[in-house]
Amino acid sequence: MVVLKGDKYVLLLFLITHAAKTLAEKRLLLHSEADIAAELIRLRSELANVTQQLGTALVEIKSLKSTQSITNLHPGSMYVRWGKKTCPNSTELVYHGYTAGKHFNEKGSGSNNICLPSDPTWLHYLDGDQGYRATVYGTETDIPTNPFFKYDIDQQDMPCAACRTDRSTTLMIPARKNCYPGWTLEYYGYLVSAAAVTYHSYEYVCLDGEPDFLDKGAKSDDEHILHLVEGQCGSLPCPPYVDGRELACVVCSK
Image (cartoon, rainbow, N blue to C red; front, top):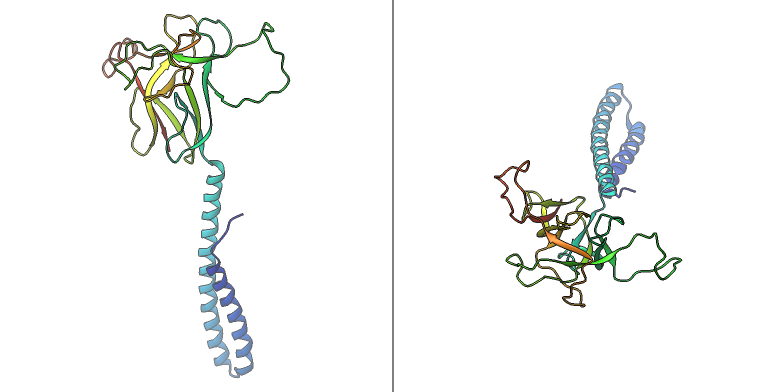
C-alpha cells in the first residue's frame, strides 16, 4: 500500500468543498445574467486549478507506486564472504560457518563450494557410512609460499559468512582488486579453486585478503583444498594478463 503525503489531499478536498459551498451561497445572491456569467467564469477557473493540482497528485501517485514496485522487486542481495566469520560494516550477517566442498580427489559429489552453517539442524538421518552418498568436507588452504597475505595461512581451515546488503546486485569480479565506478566494495582478496594437477574440479571463489581461521588450527587434512589461481597466456591475451601471475578478486554491490 502506498502512503501518500496528506497535505495535498486535504487541500484538494478543501478546494472542492469550498467551491461547492461558494456556488450554493452565490446562487442565493445572484440576480442578473451578468452576475451568473461572471460567477460561472470564476468557478471554471477555480475548477481548472483543482484539476491541475489533481493531475499533479496522480503523477506523484504513479511515481510512488513505481518506486515501491522497484523496492519490492529488489529487496537486497546475498553473497558469501569466503574465509571470514563476519560481514563488512553496514552489511547484515545472516549466518557464519564453514567453507566446504568435495574431496579434492573424488570423482563425484558436488563441484561447487558451499558455506555450511555453524549451527546445523536435522531431519531424518542414519549415522555412519551408508554407501552411494555424496560427501562434503571442510576446507583448508594450500598456499605454502606467501607474499600475498599479511600472515601465514597455509593449511588453515577456512570459515565463511553469508552476508546480505541492501543493494540489489552483487558481483564477484575476478582479476581486479577494486570495483568499477558506481559500485560499492564489499571485500577483496585472491581468486582460489582446485589445483590444476588434480582431475576433479570445483568453482572459483574469492578468498578474503585477510582471512580468519577456524579454531582447529593449522593441520593438513588433505580434503577440500583451495589453491591460488594463475593466469595462463594463449587464448587469454597477454598483456593485459601476465603468464603465471596470481589473480586478485573483488566482490562489489550496487
